Image 1: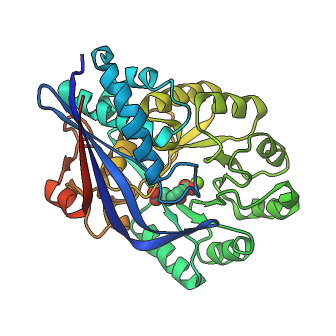
Image 2: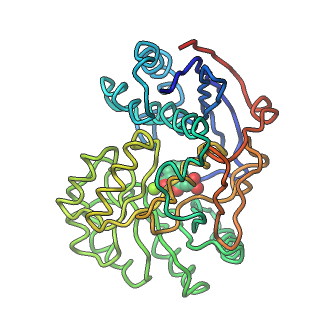
Length: 372
Ligand code: OSB
Ligand code: MG
């Protein structure tokens, strides 16, 4: 049994070290929730809501996650408090609410942390993780000045990051890759378009094949599965889906249609650890490669990503950079560090990092408590 006594929503505001630009716009600040779930026995579990302030990536925003948690999800937890024997039950309890996966994921993941701490084992071990050290890559935003991008690549390559991802958009793709490959002919390199192209760009996208890219992430529509299959049949570069995948059903469709060879799994986008594990198992059976995506998380969200990335089929480096890549100071102790492009898993119970209550307090702008 998991007897949840209280849920606390901490609303935080933090500013990124560097504004992060994609084909859709720029993220400078994060306004998000840390969910603290407290059991009757006094165990504290934490989750992080990854929605942004505006709905540019998916439909969710900080405000919609708040509405969902306050008015629907927490009331469902209150009503079903005697029916939680395992964190996977949370998904069933929330199943009457359509979509809103980031809000659901934040709460479910807090309860996974709580449960693992209650059992006194690391979360990655509870999930059936297969490695105690993971390879990681870095995602670099669009830069006005190509030299800034080249310097950043140089710096992350020299720190040992296992692959470099660069954001692209129309007019900032072939020319950029030409320069990057000139200076770094052999690095493991991929691009992410965040839906910047359409099928009219097939001939343009064929030119990518000569840059020996590990993959192209989400070239077409954020809600498309069919056109990606068409595009994949014309290009050699493997397609990776990000925005298109929200559920196990989406993955089934992508597999059936050959829409991608690789999937970027984000806990928030798919609705939490339980679905992510189901997606993992289905992809493992069908030869789809996986890696763990990022949402410019603070430490708690990052710790959950690190645990997820230990699952067997996550065979490609994730967007899981060091805390210091994103933040001046993080809200966990110790912060996440990367050595030679790898993160060593903690052997402490749950997410394996302590929440730094002083830092949490410093960045908190609002706190709400709910008795369950
Ligand atoms: O498309 O993968 C993406 C960041 C915010 C929103 C969407 C994406 C990203 C990233 C950065 O690529 C991932 C990270 O470093 O957290
Ligand atoms: Mg992406």
